[in-house]
Amino acid sequence: MSRAEQRERTRRTLVAESRRLFAAKGYAAVGLAEIVRESGVTKGALYHHFEGKTALFRAVLEEVQQEVAARVVAAAEAAEDPWERLKAGCAAFVEASADPEVQRVMLLDGPAVLGWNEWRAIDEATSAAHLSEALTALVADGTIPPQPVAPLTRLLSGAMNEAALWLAQSTGQATEQFTGQSSGQSRGPSDLADTLAALSRLLEALKTT
Image 1: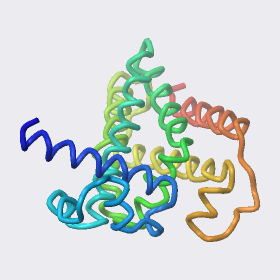
Image 2: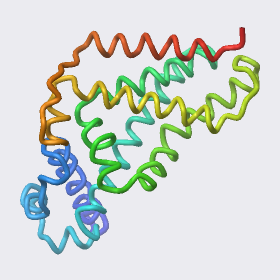
Image 3: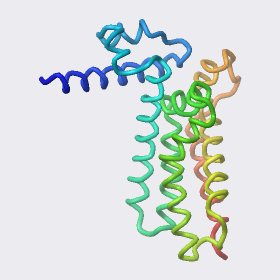
Image 4: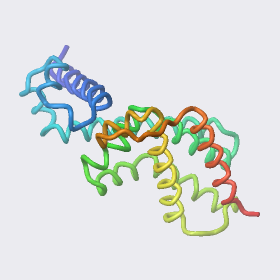
């Protein structure tokens, strides 16, 4: 194995182990010493690739965001027409966001660790970008009435993110880890189904009558 390959392998290991730890415990509860130990590398090796824990978390978040975006694109491309592609992509986003690991990294810790502006920039480059493209096409072909796409994209994206945060209470665990308090509520599979049904009705209301 070449030196470049070794460096890349070390970086992948650091990101993978950090992702596992951040998802299980939350960013604040994970220290660099634990990451180094679980990754089987030295602290010097970590600092060779990342400036610190925040930079490492950023790499994890970008990976999670890209995976969610890939799921959205795959679901959309499997649909038959532009309207069904939008609906399938939005449903895929909500379903992916119901994953506890995605909730923990992308929705709970992401904005808190990186700040709202940086978190939004990462979101804009992934899932929100695909949503904007889909809406632009539907406005262009008349499926959705003529209107500015930018505010519509942000309204829908915000609604889906908020729904995903609500679903993060599926076991109460994610909320308890993040706030230190139990939500006192329990979300289950029926809540995901109800959310997807509500999302479908919301999207249908956008169509030209």
